[in-house]
Length: 420
Image 1 (cartoon, rainbow, N blue to C red):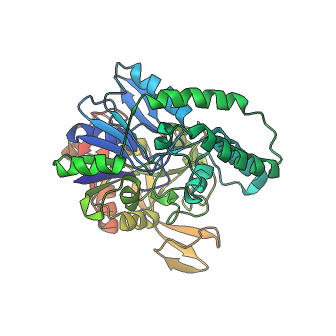
Image 2 (image 1 turned 30 degrees about the horizontal axis):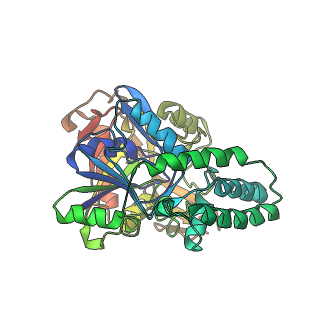
Image 3 (image 1 turned 30 degrees about the vertical axis):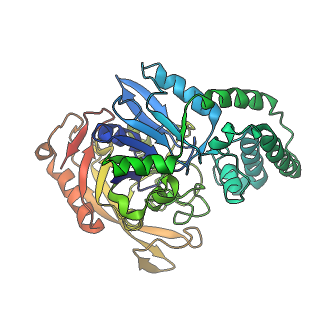
């Protein structure tokens, strides 16, 4: 049996905390897509920890963790991340496995990412410059190097062949930056990666399922950044939706049981791309300040706005969401008035559907207005203690989405999660 936790907006919904909360109930936590452009923020013993590639179950000693074949892995960032985890007294090699099908991010992938963004100028998509897109391009182009290739004696010749191909592309971009130091770090990190348990990921997962073990699949980025169904082309390079669990881990669709979708009580986005409910005013700035909305991976200020139910219902539909976690509910505590986007007006027509391209025509969001609750909710532990106006807010979401908010997060701590 496989349950899934994934984001329903443009990322940064607080998935890391949610996975960390549920991880003790599972035998295995698995990352099924994405790369170091993801940043899952946890608070361990009161200290902030941001995981980029390692599954968020790593801090639970009784839980095994696997990086699946759908992930693109940067060995240098992986090594640094492991050192952070080990600083908390965790034996990272004991419960962390890496699928042999996991694709490697090379230094030249990062260079290509940077060169491509520079070439696009004002048309750039807001890449994190981690080499994600070029790595996935090599995967679909059937040129990629995978973690399992590290076990082959001809790995170096494979690497040189791919590097030469990349160099020709970099020459076309007139990219002249010296990346030799990147390569030194890369090969050093490869030796470190070889010391981990590299497994046949698809057999590993399916054998565990056959034994009756519970698997939690942890998504990176979010539904609206899906390569096929997101706000293309301002998306990531992998399938972030629940279907990506099947291709990223090698499990059959009928193995998936629960899909837990995570959304903020409002909306944020990092980088370029359409954002219908964005607030470029004092209210948006207040949301950013109260929510500490700065990218966990990039540090970039997040764009902020009201919750968008058109996009959220779409995300629930394509993911088959069974329950919702609403995070950062406490950020709305001090607002007198709240707005919920219930439809778009595009070319003078009202719609509740997400268009093919949000930038093709201007979108005017249509709002329903709610009274704020003006109450500090951060210390509330039980659902019956929530202010009535918050209950009304949640009840409207449930009715509109046809999927219930089952959990409310009212702070970053592990204990700040209310079951409704």
